[in-house]
Length: 85
Image (tube, rainbow, N blue to C red; front, side, top):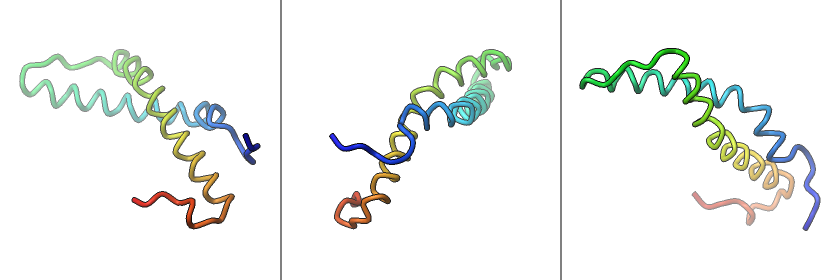
């Protein structure tokens, strides 16, 4: 196992979590508004924030893993290490 330079995935996730949870809360709220067009309930702000916090945790973790991967690729400087997308 090699030591990586820079922040760990956990630290990146903790720093980005408020942004991920906020974005998820807004998306949950707007999804509830769209769902209300076919008879669904409109979520309150509190429920949207709560659900956004729950959905934002795994989403932020996966995003932090992606950022850490990009940092590792940038540190190696080896084009063969890059994912083919």
